[in-house]
Amino acid sequence: MNSKYVAIAVTTECNFKCPYCQSTGESVTNVQGMWNYNRLKEVIKAFLEAGYRNFRITGGEPTTVPYLGELLDFLLQNSDVRVRINTNGYNIEKYIDQLNSQTEVIFSVDGFGNAFSPKRLTDELLKKIQYLQSKNISIRLNCVVTKQNANEIPELIQFCSKNELNLKLLDLCPRVEYQGNVQNDFLENNYFELNKLSIPFPKISSNFRTNMIRKGTGIPMSGYSLGNGHWLQIKDSSQKPYYASLCNNCQYKDNCIEGVFSLSLSVGEILRIANCVNQDYWIKLKGLKQRQIEEELKKMEKNFFLIND
Ligand code: SF4
Image 1 (cartoon, helix red, strand yellow):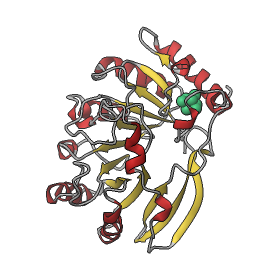
Image 2 (image 1 turned 180 degrees about the horizontal axis):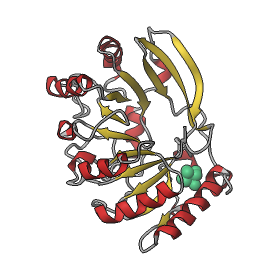
Image 3 (image 1 turned 90 degrees about the vertical axis):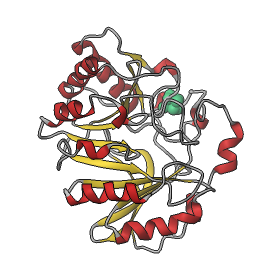
Image 4 (image 1 turned 60 degrees about the horizontal axis):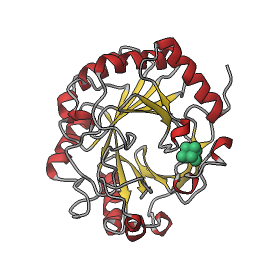
């Protein structure tokens, strides 16, 4: 399967304000707002032409944009395209007619009753998850593990096993800012080492990396079986990520713990590598025509993933 992959942060808006998130979510921190739909379609056409078939729609909260349904229809008209949506569950049920076997919904859930994050597995959210499950939509839960919710993780793992859900656990990432505040001690005060978790399920893989764009990129992960074909993945940033050789001289490398694993599109029409904060390597797409965007994509693939034509 073609694995060329791009994440699209369609908006910086979110109905929640999670303390570990940037004020612009997965978008670059210096631009607020939302993609213009027609322009986004033009840019996506360039990605499709360049062979990209895996799209992750994120934000902010992607279900807050008025055109999400149209966007899903536009992408999914290509039967070989796969779309993942990162959501906190807000209004996701409204898109049930668009979701199908080409899609996966990734719910961000940080535990059951903890006060640290608003992303709680409430009865209301559970009903939405079960509704999507009843329609055979692929679902995964993502959970950021911190000192605040680490005690809830064993219950969350058991819950996912019992309810036939996939689960990914991630540790806290250094960010340029957290909800608009540069809090240098935030990470230090809340970081929880994932290797301290005890997982009462069989390990099925270790040290596997993504094969998005190029095999062997990103952070090595480990996998566990939760039974009935469902799994737990652990993405522990203390493992060594993949960097491109041009990252070696980057002044931000120490805080760039996810390294290089995908392309990403931000509000403001910025194309960059994953969460790259080095603006020398960002590409501004504003005003570029489809053909020029395709050229820029090739340059990025060559520079970061050593892929030539
Ligand atoms: S910030 Fe960008 S250039 Fe710097 S190490 Fe990370 S991916 Fe590489």
